[in-house]
Image (tube, rainbow, N blue to C red; front, top):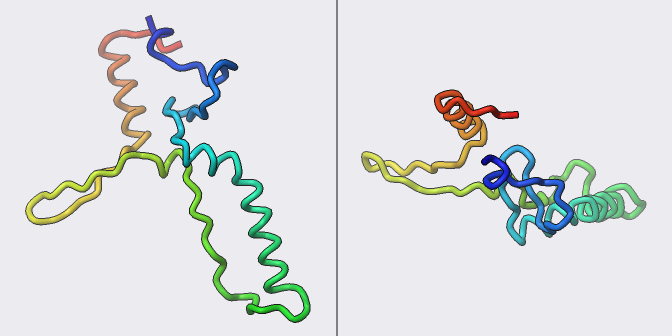
Length: 114
């Protein structure tokens, strides 16, 4: 029963990136960012060295570093703006909340979560 509903993240047939904790698939932007994160970090490291450490550098050492805005699984959560009493609140998917809900559902329905 559970085999039909769950995703095997180690299945060699799937080429998509899957979050181990939530089972969600990464978006195309998220996949490219996650796969190229190491290269982007190396480029930022080299840029930091050439701009700040080499003789004749352009920037001071303590100047702020440009933020690398890479998409991760946690940043891919759906965000919704809800207005309550003339105030806007952003609702964000919380994996801990979903984990607690799954445990409660499994407990009430007496499912074996092996």
